[in-house]
Image (cartoon, rainbow, N blue to C red; front, side):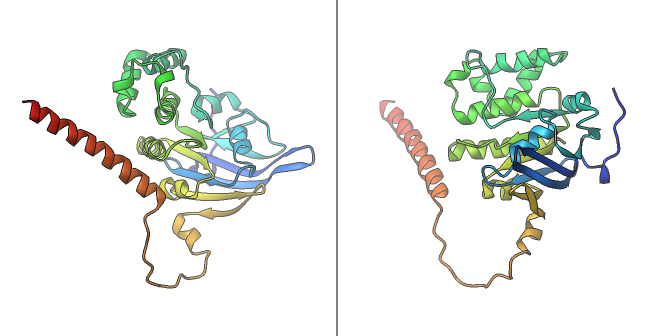
Length: 273
């Protein structure tokens, strides 16, 4: 394997002057940033901002027109094979086999990656992502959140040091989104570096150690959340009666209904006895 090059500040990902155009359309226009090892870095931008294009360049699936990038110390152009060994990429849609069970999906990928104990690897990941109860069900019966958790679990086989998550919660319901957020936090707590692309502001705010805003192909802001807040004028202190958000209402109502069903079941069983 080629020797790794030293990235600035020993960054897990380092990007300098990346540009990419499709004909006359400039998608990326001189992108620069570093991602610290073991951190969650959110690349925030609207649809068409260039987020997926940049991830594809970092994953060696696409070649930049101009600029340099290193991932885990390897140049994405000259050491593409080493980059692929060091990364995992989870796209916007879950790449799972619906005809297989969750366990079979994991065992299959573990065998393809030449893991010594594929069954044990699958069992560990099923437990880690709270999928043990559904392990032997066909994935076709899984909810969207379960499929996404399985997809992320599959991406961790082989313990890749760098994980790319390209809009991982697109199309998910509120509870499934929260489940994926927890899975992302577990990735970082396990030592992985996570580059997360999203168009959801709350997602970046909840998960990221550092946030970069990509707009019209350029990074227009990059920093920790508190640093970004200081870009705005000081806030006025006013008393405002806060109303619950629709997400809070949804979660409260659905969890309350679940508790009511459980209570009704217990009372019914008590009457029979």
